[in-house]
Length: 161
Image (cartoon, rainbow, N blue to C red):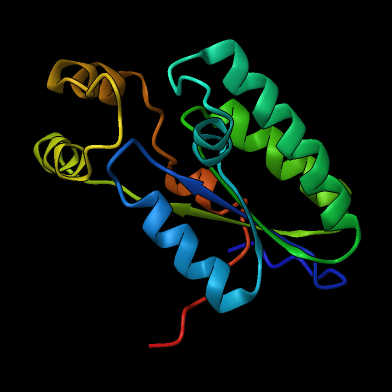
């Protein structure tokens, strides 16, 4: 496992499909670590933007990342809860955070499609609701981190019990 020393700045990428538990996990980390959490869904909901509007999502993620980089330079702990489905996205965020002098962790959350679908149905946040077929399609597109990729990140922090 890669150990990167910094001035205390830390980026935590929370990676996974919808329903994997990213928000629950990231919110717990935010409280425990006194971190700043960035979630495009949260901002889109607050602004009344359709969460399926990909161009608007990209603009929000770009804005959040500009702010996150500034906060990393100040030595803060930042949590990015975008899902980070592609290895290339995770690599880019890791390298940019390292350039800011930050340690970088990857927290990968996963579950079977049936469980993801059940959780999404239970929370009932999406309008229109996410169909099971969409989750199956997304599971095919998603690039899970390999052990080799995980080795590029710092050891994950642990939460108090």
